[in-house]
Image (cartoon, one colour):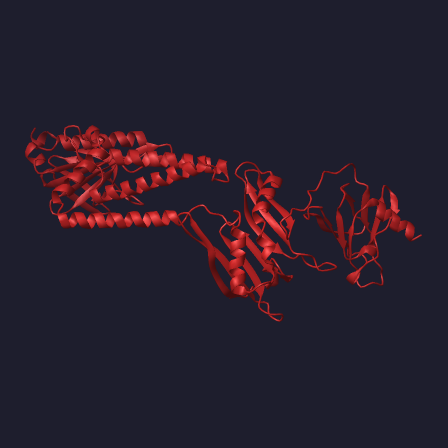
Amino acid sequence: MPDADFPAVDYDLTIHDGEVLTVFQLRDSGIRLVGDGIEWRIGCDARRAALSDIRAIRLTTEVETAQGPVGATTCQIRFRGGGAVTVFGGNSLSPDPADRRARYERFVAELHRRLRPDDRAHISFIAGYGGSRFYLLLVGVVVLAVIWLAAAVGFLLGFAPRRIGAAIGLSIGALLTVGLFRLLRINAPHVYDPGNPIGSARAGSIGETLGQAIGEIRRGMTLARGLTAAAIGAAVIMIVVVIVASHQRVSLFEPGRARLAFDAVLARRGPNPTVTYVAVTPSELLVETPEDRDSTSRIDWRASRRTLFRWNEWDDVSGPAVRYPMSLSEELGEQRFKLERDDGAHLDDLVTAAIARAALGPGSAVTRMTLIAPHAFMKPEPARWTVEVDGPGGHAKLYADRTGTLFPPTPAPAGPPRIVIRAVPGNPYGLFPVNSGTWIRVINPDQSVRFDDTLKPGDSYRVPDIPGLRLQTGKPETLDVTVDGRPARLPPAGYAGRVDVVLDPQSLLTGAEAQK
């Protein structure tokens, strides 16, 4: 058909100068097919090119997935001399996706219809991504699929502590991986049919593209290149094997491993060091010692594992590393105590007992253990273990003595409260204001804190009927205690006017009788 028979047609489509696939902002729009040419405007610059100057047309196609559109639908037109323009077809996020897609398809069909046979003879009709872009994305998608497969296997084997979150993550990863594979399949580089540009542009095949690439490699392969490629491949495989072998799932809480880590630190630091803080995680042991009596600095010793295949050694000790805390409030341990070799002898049994006691559901795991000596309230307290457990049911914190034995569980109250502690005004001639209030702390048999607050005069605390609860206070003279409504009495104050007593109803009543 003669060029004069082609009417001028305007298309309201976004455009961009040059050959691009992804841009952050499209400022220009509008392209026109007129006679034997194309007209468009970039900013204030009007441009025109003849259809006979076209040297290549590349079509790319977006893919709609459950996560939204992936890729972009574009028509990239390259002219003789290096100039180019990219026409975008939009996606489901566009203001008018259906109308825009229809306008784009009409533009592409009309552009190819106007090309004369001698024009088509020197035009490259290419669909899909460029070679390097395609292969980089293919490698990325394959790696993503391998990671997803490994995560799925770990999920099935029970390695994920938070199974609901892991299942959601795996579902999102599967949708993303499938969507990217579909994008690459459709946009695998191939030659499309100018007589059916839209349909044939979607007929990409990853297998055919890889087959063509392998054929090209074989035709250009020589003995030297083959040996070089084999050496590079062998080196990559060895690196992957070493990385996988050195990142096995090995925990310091497994039988005997904590003892090995303790022995490694004590071999460097010396036997029975004075410490303030010991922390054990699945991958590391931290022992913190004070530098000296007059310094606030801390010296850290760390033991971690060396792992390769099934061989593991917990003798990678680093230290001494001097650390200066910004404030004492940052320190988890302030009291000093002697570290014994047997402190880490039964941690594997403690892990099993703590997970069973916490009862947080399948997949629960101990994430951290710390050994510190509690702050001396009336007398020095023995060091004890704090065990933190995470699981589907939440987070739990339990306590055990130095031998790794959990303190007795706290039972449910046997009945309504029998003991009531009530704060009263203080001595008007004492050191503290009359109405300053009285601090009390109630500790459960399992050593967790049940109540820790200040009672103002007139406030009261009804003690649950649980055997073994302990009361700590620094102003016992400002507390009135009753048992079953009868007057009771706390024992005499000790060091610095403090009281640390087991709240036994009979003992409190006996104390009151003794004062009569």
